[in-house]
Image 1 (tube, one colour):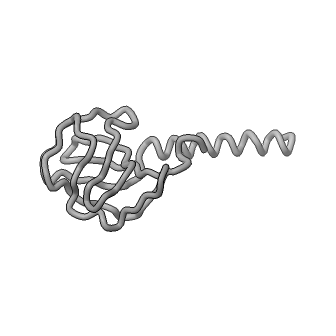
Image 2 (cartoon, helix red, strand yellow):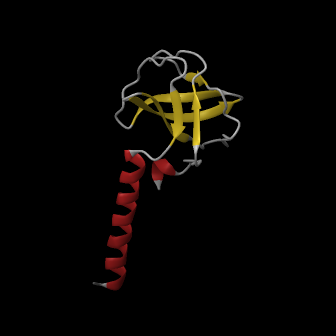
Length: 116
């Protein structure tokens, strides 16, 4: 499980930035984060996007409507974002690749157990 130990998921979460954000910012303010809650060590993987532009971020803390983030996750690039850009919690390629790896690990273990 490793790096996904504290990953949290939430269905249908979408909000927007209330202010512009620079590529070096380590926090963002959104219109509504009331559905988000994190315990120590937990995090969300979220996508900032507007049009075709996107950035994957790791949300490590939530205080009111302020999200503390680690930028440029999963090979994306930190960039400036305008007020009104979207923030959503949705599956990413990293999530799906992690599932593929785990399924492969289960198959390998079953083969070893069953001797097939």
